Amino acid sequence: MIERKYTVIFEPAEEGGFVVHVPALPGCHTQGDTFEEALEMAKDAIEVYLESLQIDGLPIPDDKPVLEYSIAAKLAIAV
Image 1 (tube, rainbow, N blue to C red):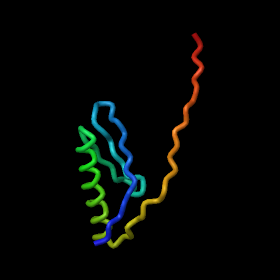
Image 2: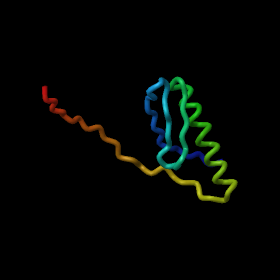
Image 3: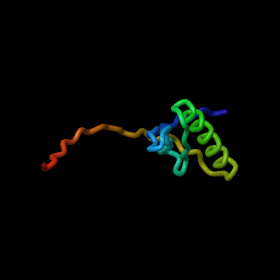
């Protein structure tokens, strides 16, 4: 068994909980009501995604390093 690591993005959902996506695996999305639940759902989604690729004889993608940077921007509001 080969172990792979993937970057997982957790975004707070408007209705609560988290929406999760895996940039290296297009279409691999899930969600959870808590961070812990979203994390478990992400693990399951990745495993199912990779299993389906394997069954279809498709290559298993590697996680590509992603540069993430937060930028602060000033917003001028006219009163």
